[in-house]
Each structure stands twice: as structure tokens, then as C-alpha cells.
Length: 303
Image 1: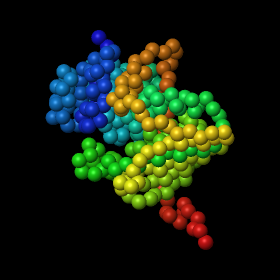
Image 2: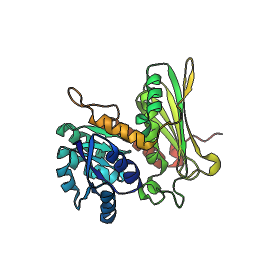
Image 3: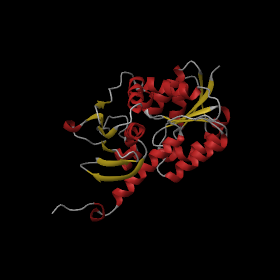
Image 4: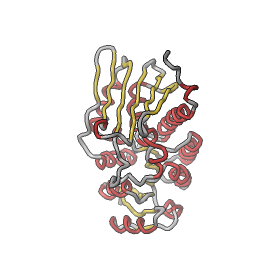
């Protein structure tokens, strides 16, 4: 029997990625599901021969690890409770909507001594992770850019009804993915500048401690001619683009699960644990605060 896992969440991502990958993993026993919709929890649990729980705390008491696929504010409320009960945490991005909420998760994970991972998809996609490792082996990168522009809020899209995505937009939904590459490639971020474009588009300039500067162009409402994704890094001697993924998000989730299961000597640590999750929340929060300033307080008009 493998590690006993529970799933918190019943939406598309919970069903098609979290639950599916856990059920397929040879070293995992998917034993339970809890969700805010009891009907969908029953359906998802039945699809994998698991039990639907009426209360999240009952699920936490019966498992060794919990995979979260719920809105960030729900995750931030429940993850500390799961960790306090001794459950390892497989979390979604963003970790939370505020650094205060993220800090509570970090503090509880540290106090409980449990493992934690935040599922930044590219970090567990084999060829993209290999590319990032090559990038990190060099130290002369001066700038970078990440462009993630899509249109997921159209009718028929599985995320179209996501209330938190509609409210928070691309900054909080795909911004964490951009940061999961730019920060390890160029170093910690010291300050940001941000501005809005059409729809929910946000352009963020990141100033890194290394002296490098990078940009994120993010949108969930891009028109057909503006959709696409790319990531480039520029250095003293060369430039490089992150390759397109050669495996699926389901494969990446499987790799993430395997990483969480891996034993370590001493305290369990990983580059994508809750500490890094908290670091990305701090950057997103700083960009959000910048965007809330009056326009005349954050730009200098060109004469």
C-alpha cells in the first residue's frame, strides 16, 4: 500500500489532474475526496473507488497527505489545519492571496515537520525543468521576459466559471507560473513596477537582486491575435528560450507526487516548497498594491 492521499476539491483541475494522477501513481493510495459540493465529491470519489467525506477534518484524520485543488483563499484556510494534523501538503498556486495567509501555512508546516510542494507545472515538466537547471548553472543573465496570454474565461472553457480567476485575473492565475521560472533563473526580486493593459492584461517589471530586470506580460482575456506563450532569457554571451512542454500537466503532476514521496535526510526541503510559494505571493501582492495606486502616483507623463 502506498501513501494514503486525500483530495480537497472537485472541479476540473481536481478531477483531471490531481485525482487522476494520484489514482494512477503506483506509490499512492487515493482514499478520499472532500469538496464544497458534496454531490461532485461523491461523483469524483466514486470514479476512483474512494470515499467522499462530509467534513474536511475527517479526511485529514484518515490520510497521510492532501492534494489541494481549491481557490487560494480556501486552500489558505484549510492547509494549516491539514498540516497541523500531520498531513503532507501538495498545494496549488498561488499559495494564498496575502503574505499573512501564506505565512500561516509556512509556520504550520515548519511546526508540524511535514513535507510541502506547490505545483508549478513547468518545474515538474521534465524538459522545461532540465532547461531551467542549465540556465541556473550560468550566472551572467541580465534580463528575461515571460509572456502568458490566453483566453480561458470564454463560455465552454473549464475555467470560465472560476470566480476567483474572474476577480483576480491573470496576475494571480498565471503570474505564479511566470515567477516560478524567472525567480530561480535571475534571482530574488527586490521591487516591482506594474501597469494594466486591455482586458485583464498586466505588465510587470521585476527588479532582481542580481541586477537583472525581467518582465511578465499576462492575460486571461487575450483576443485571438494576441494569444501565446514564450519565455526568453538574455545574457552576456547568449540568449535562450524555454522549450515547449513535451509532456502533459498530468505527467507533471505525477512527477510532483513522486517528489513529495521522496525521502530526505534531515528536514525536508524543496525549491518549490511553501517557502518559495510564499515568496511568489509576496511579489504578486507587491504588484497588486502598485496597481491600486492612483494613476498619477505611479507614472511620469511624457512631455
